[in-house]
Length: 108
Image 1 (cartoon, rainbow, N blue to C red):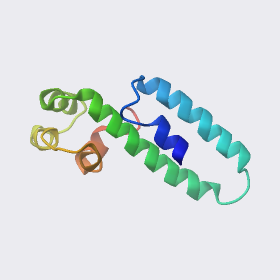
Image 2 (spheres, rainbow, N blue to C red):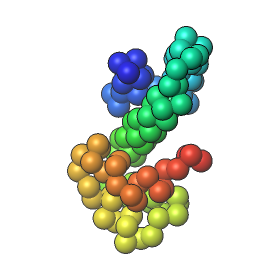
Image 3 (cartoon, rainbow, N blue to C red):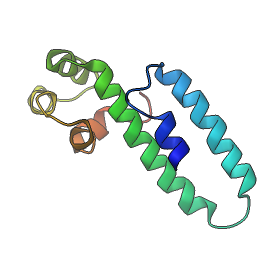
């Protein structure tokens, strides 16, 4: 878990594709090491944590409320929801909202 937190740190200034590549290496290693057991439950939990932390990284990259609003509109969020989400403070809080989870699905 500490490795995932380190690799998905918001202050680590590398691209998200590089972060995804490094996380894939770590997760692949864990899966190969823990082949037997309750791996399904652990991987589902890990998946939700990684997606949440990636949403925070993307949200921080967008920086300004105007940029956030514009990008949320591009992702298919209604103008009303995009306006309310763009004004939120706190990365962790906003990235758990339904609007952001809908906008930044598996495709992003």
